[in-house]
Length: 419
Ligand code: NAD
Image: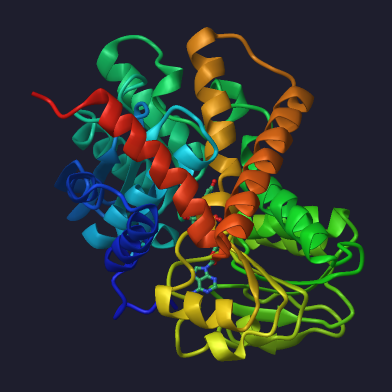
């Protein structure tokens, strides 16, 4: 489980401070960039199926909009809090800048366990939350997307709610929608596809053969399951995966398509059985010997406590903020190559950007066009971060931050401080 004693926002600020120092960034710009620009906190009632009314709390935070409208997912999870949303919003700013798409960073969340709600409760909660934050969102100002605990159906309800208020359909107000209502081909797979593209590029850089490489993945939702599937298609051997129900390990490789089909039917891997599978805990899975480890669940999974025992050559962060700054130092000293979240999982927001553009133009591209454009952006972004990393002899995280923070700082400076 994510360690609640660690404050994700403090970690995000610490990462920013280190990059600002390295870039020798002007002190006034540092003051502007190390805090979110705008935060909305809402408490709202929802009618439950049994007739009771419950009050839920949620947030929408916009970190910086110098490079374009705010962009970032909506999370439904019991551990959501304002600092987590702030951190996620800040990471979105850097991520969009890193892959050079014209967005600022935002994030939203509701404190709720969506697996405990019926479909109709989930719909009412989503429609009311969309209404509460509608003063901030809009196709030209703040565009949400899916994150942990939300999916295409939730995005469709959100889009429909905003459209009902406006009196006409506004597809570009949110991304990650089902294809039937203006979603983009390739969006569901985009984050995992991006994770596997950078894993392949990093392996190439390290001289590690991707065919036959052993892979361990923590989290088996949208990002983790697609990453597992794509890595297997590249010829790697996925030997362990986990979700809230724990870890599933088979050193000879897992049957990923069967496990994906199982989660579609049962919502999680709970109860999944197959010959040769050993059960491990969510902490043990991180310490298994493998070539590539991809944490694809929540923040603060790799800390100073377990970083010394991580047993991979390449760590690719599918999740946002899975590694604390203290753990980063340990991994760097140990020579473990880390592809940071703001690069590794940027495929999602990249195809969200494609979806937004297609929605605004009402002109849709083929899946092949989308995947080719995504491939080019991920590959190019990887190369620019690697170049920065090698030039300054720093970690890939620092290399990525230096590219991203410099872009946002430049945009903020060119626009100037109003008034
Ligand atoms: P999801 O809700 O689809 O899946 C989350 C998965 O994590 C589930 O399998 C859940 O069972 C598992 N999980 C939860 N707690 C866990 C724990 N303590 N240990 C192991 N597994 C646990 O969410 P997702 O969209 O796949 O997001 C996963 C991560 O990727 C998050 O950090 C999210 O911010 C990040 N991310 C998602 C996207 C996207 O497009 N969905 C894009 C970029 C980054």
